[in-house]
Length: 347
View (cartoon, helix red, strand yellow):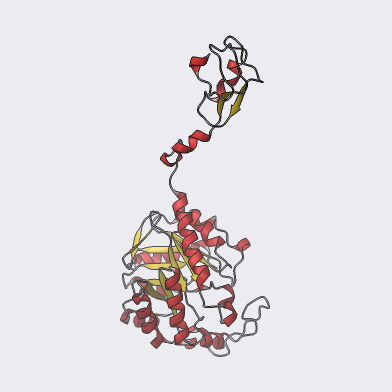
């Protein structure tokens, strides 16, 4: 798996996981709340904040669709109305991006049409995110790729052919650095439909791209497991408090959970290490606590070793236990006191 550079930060298997905090609509139409979320996730250690750049009118038409799935968080909501509630006003982008930069975080967005790309270019974003539902929008892909900036693309609700076609379209249009995110586009997702084993398979199919996870499950367990399977990027929705409500609050992390996500994914990455057998330098002192052969009862010179007077115990200062059977019935060369670590010279 390769390494790419996003806003000066290296992303790849030899670097700690890159954590993206997705603001989405959890600002609840308050710029001050949006800024507070940026402050909170920056303090928690997130590496980037991501917005979504659209308007209700660039997404759909009034009356086009009402969500009729009773299992949906947004059951009964009219789609245009929902996007009107969730969208981030475009004039908020610059203050939100500036606040992120003040904290040393990267800030970028998911454009949902070509006009959004044109707008984001005026803000000099360091990268673009392609949402799962937009990865079949080839004109949008070509416009994003033409910027020459790194692209992160989610693969939720997509066939493998659609992912491969989108990758080809981006590459052909000038995208040189592309991250693919395994994603399950249900809100929330469940551990049962997350299918993290896809991550190493994606890495095999798309060897030119680092692989990550766009995670809509509760908690951080799936993200930690994803890193163990090779994910270099983790994206999670964030909020101040789920109890405050909001279009995405039910599957969003609170700041304390973001801090846990940052810490535990980095620990998982560190724990991957490399293939290692034998005794590590850090383990050398621990070898003292392996077992060895000890005299368990006082033995006179010439007396033979028996199961009663020879024991396999800690520490490892005597002969290795592999010689136990060979030594039974052999005579001691000298008097030996109970508690003596057995050596060859004593036989």
